[in-house]
Image (cartoon, rainbow, N blue to C red; front, side, top):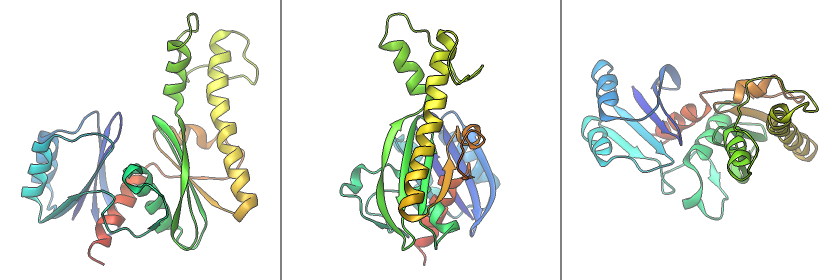
Length: 240
C-alpha cells in the first residue's frame, strides 16, 4: 500500500493507494507526525512519497523514512513518467508536475491543459507524447481579494460568497464579479487558445475546481484528487 502526501500552501492532503486505486483520502490544516502515526499504524503502508511547496519538519521526514520500506520527497532529480522541458526544473512547483502526471495517466494519448485553482492558479500544458512543455502562474481568488483590500485605502475585504452579476451594482459586487468572473473568463480564454492550437483535453483541479466547473463555457473534467493521483503514479514509476 502507498501513502501519498501533498503539503500545499494552506493545507495538507494524504491519500492511500493500492496500485493505481485510490482507497481513502484525508484533508488537514497542517501536517504533523501524530497524524501520520495514526494513519500508518492503522494501515499496512509500505511505500510513500511526499510533495511539499514549503519546508517540512525534519522529524516528520525522519519518521516516514524510518517507518516505510521505501520513502522519498519529490524533487527535480526524481525519475518522472513525463519528459520535463521546463528550463528551470528546480523551480517547478511539485504540485504542478504531479497534477500534470495525474492528467497524463488518465489521458495518455491527448494533448492536455491542466488548470489548478488554489492559492495560485496554474496553467500547464502536456502534449500527447508525454512532454511537459511549461505553463503560467496567476493569483488565485483569495490572493486577488486580499490584494485589492491591502493595496488600496477604501476597498473592503470580501470573498466569493454572494451575488456575482455581470456588472457590479455596488462596491462588494464590483469586486466579487471582477475577481470571480475575471478568473472564469481567464480560464475560458486559455482553453479556447489551446483548442484552436492543438485540440486539448482540459483538467481542472484544486480547492476551487468544482466552483468554477459550472461557471465555464468550455467543457472540462474536474478531478479534486489529480495531484494525489499524479504523486502515486510517480511513486509507482520508481518500480517500473
